[in-house]
Length: 286
Ligand SMILES: Nc1nc(=O)c2c([nH]1)NC[C@@H]1CN(c3ccc(C(=O)N[C@@H](CCC(=O)O)C(=O)O)cc3)C=[N+]21
Image 1 (cartoon, rainbow, N blue to C red):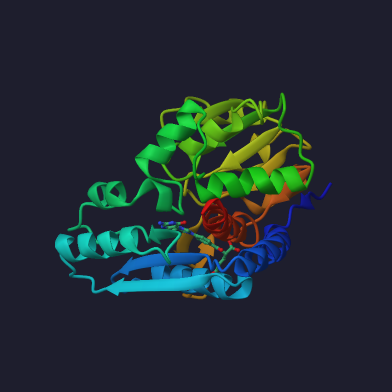
Image 2: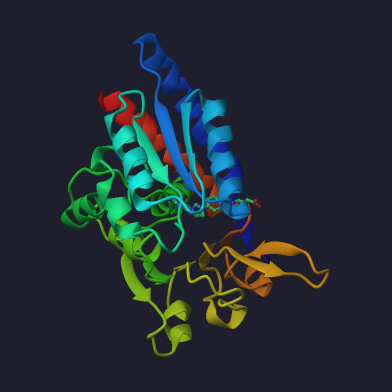
């Protein structure tokens, strides 16, 4: 058996088409949604991600607000940029690209973002709202995963979902999203302290791997026919000496799974689409 591919790239393109229509409607009311990005330093990976976000904005008609600081920027310089974007009415939402250089206080920076302009949905206030079941900007990657599964009619209600990874950007909030009443999945949140990981993944209908460990999930760990979502993205040096990105799911999983969300072409494009959705929704609320 070869697994069906759940195409995140095509689905993200579909979502961008829908957002373009909503952006047009906003334009008729004289509103142009604006997404800000704050990039500190010159990490090529981070630069590439930020460039991608601005390309996405241009495709959909969202205005880009770009702030860049040198790698040795002081905490005060970063604070000033945050204060400026918090005050800018043209900026409906923004992100601070992570990771920040080690000399900066990431927690302080993230907490100083206006929660109502938190396009990532990672502000403690928004994560708290998610815990409490209040309306909030949702974290982009978990939201993108749920949206992709929904659009492919993967049943979540009653499904047994093994989430591997408890990170703040994916695993932890994904568990919260999937266990809301509207999703009603049963989640087992696995992590580095989990004993016999395979026993948990094997009894799941859906396995979502966000551990950042290349090849962690192998075919023998997957229930035949299960849906497998690869969230891992780790830079490795290939046999040819070139750098490339690899996921957490081994290639042989596709021979056992019923459906797979690949990397690349899966969760990454969905994450970017949800960032745009968060900004458009914010602009629609006025
Ligand atoms: N504040 C903040 N918010 C983030 O959302 C955030 C961040 N910091 N720091 C880094 C991670 C990583 N991330 C990715 C998003 C899309 C792709 C993506 O679209 N990947 C393509 C492949 C791209 C390629 O091959 O170059 C794919 O999976 O098909 C990847 C990685 C967002 N992040």
